[in-house]
Length: 367
Image 1 (cartoon, rainbow, N blue to C red):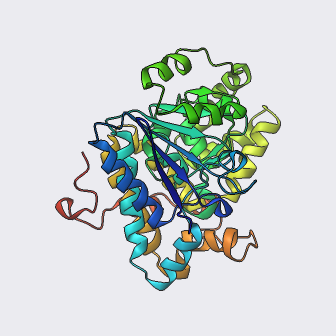
Image 2: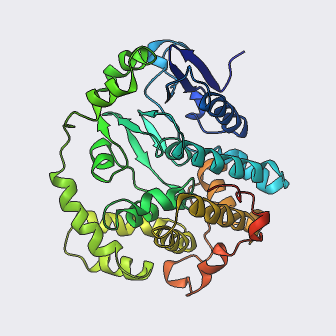
């Protein structure tokens, strides 16, 4: 039998491989628990000097070199979210509580943690990477926080790490859910260095016999060869629009822009997203700029509870978004409100009201 997380000790390294390739390594509750157990067991083990994580892909034979890189993690298992929300399965609450606790553990891990961010790195996959000491990307990296596309918001600490991007890039990525490449990830502070995908197997195989200090000198001490010129120009465009006060102002600004294709495409993307969750995500990123990671994760735990419970069952914006994207695959979600112009001031506020008192919050122990 194969497990969804392959856990290996090699020399002084603890190695984790996400092993659900047919589902693009979408995270299940058991995967979250396996990762947490491994990290806790290695945390105080004097024989473990570093930890690394990668994802498998569905090409090649299981266990072959071809199968062990090329895909990281597409996020949480949204089909499970949909089924659990409709059936009232309490495992949905457990998933988010335990996933966010895992994100916090990674950010605060006392030993070097290296993320091999090859292939798709989205949503929950970002939560497994952004706390890493070294975040490696390749020419195959496709990174995004696409949650507004399913009526959700960029969670797993997304408020925290997106709000730390330069300027208003955090708002841009949170609202559009656009996919970025390795160059953009480095420019936006979401990755550290780009390496050729072909070099990953040898690097992975060196873990456990090469010290972190040596790896750090080789990789972080090197100058990453990535083209920032076009990305720097885009930073000015992003700030001009996504620094505005409200979602409607952003859309109006993009519509009136003379910047051509980029502005028109960006406005068109925003009009496809959940209008309500655009407002929620904008507020989330801006609140998170002044928060610690622990406080941001507690806020996001409140928010995700409200996504499924303010309007429960089929009325949930998130349930509807997942239905359209992954269940029925008609790609025509019926958002409510339907248009950005129909979201009234204050509608997003309810998502930030905690259903728990402070000493009963499921993430109260995070610090």
